[in-house]
Image (tube, rainbow, N blue to C red; front, side, top):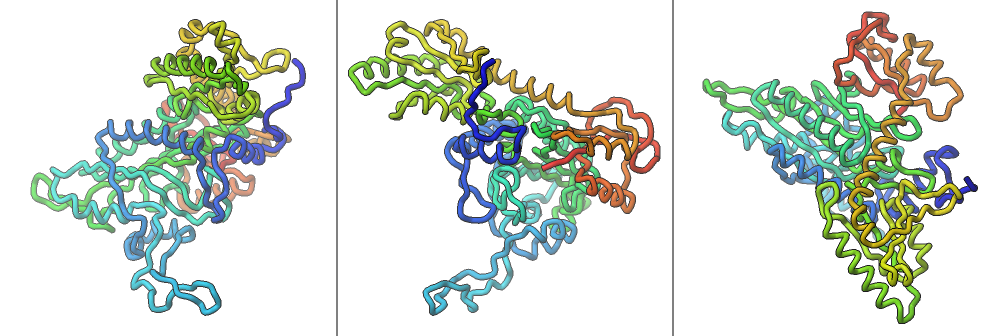
Length: 513
């Protein structure tokens, strides 16, 4: 194959972090906002989020969960009721202390000393406390349970080191909050949400994940148990892409969420919370992107097919546009992956090649270039984003008759979705090692001169307390973290490589975002 001149200036293997930033920029997904740690999400990036939001919202509602909205500002006293919870978020909280500004006499503005709030307000980092307050009013009897709520919102966690979509001071998410009569019902909901996230990541995002329980040190502040889905990025690091928490009765005690049972006795509810965020978009970039930009799974692509008429600014343009519009309508009338095909006719002025590479970098699944001769002959030139280059190192256009393309467009879209998943699954499975049987072997594996070492699945005795603290310290020395204990029934053998005690489960170890 001839040398390929890729669309990006930075290759993944040369500098993965800078490659990631260039993909976001060149795909026109987001940009800096002028506020540290906050980003402007541009139309293509937000269009992907809207698709994620809509598809996830359908799943949430199908489970009987209803959407609500709760305030952005939460009184400090709400957090003070739950000491462990507030301690976990204290260093990340943004605090509002005044409600008015005044001039400083030098042309600037300062908080008015006389406008100090009686009680500081926390800018929402998560909503357990404020939703718990509402639940304490909404739940009175066993007949009110289970109470299943969700909200789509923004949250603020003051991050020291930020990276677009992955770790920002403000991000968008959904947070489910539910209350139940007993532990069994609450655990069933916790695991239902986890399975929803697992299936969503693999079906819609084409991103294979491991679903499992987090070790004690990685639990959500105040939770009894935390579960996650973990995805492997192309640099071998793990990305936590969604979490689900069983909160026990701790938050119910703090907020007073009680109900009268069938025997007339007052009981505290068992609560859960679960959430995913715009971090999923970062996961999609790092799972599917290549040296030419983003590759968007068709399930979440704002546009699955983009038609680029090769306009000449002459009398032939009218006939060309008419052909392209008729083709657009014919494509849009078809269904792929359960929905009408999303197709855009890009009429913007400019050279077709420039527009082509713009859509390649954005990751549109199918790009059609159509010139006057194509229109006259009833043809299209198709470029599929996962088959971008031919053996000669040139763009891999396929010349197809219009009718032939229309019979193939559905399979092309659905194959593209499947190929992205299969590629990511094969890459993940090829980069998990399972034969490490000692701490020295683990350290040696990650000390080897390899750019992207992947994950290690090791035997685990579920250490807790001071013993777990020692494990965490050891892992930190090697820049590693314990990700989760997979939820499968494969047999466990041997001893825990950290404690020497008989293993009771397996756990994934990795470097992580």
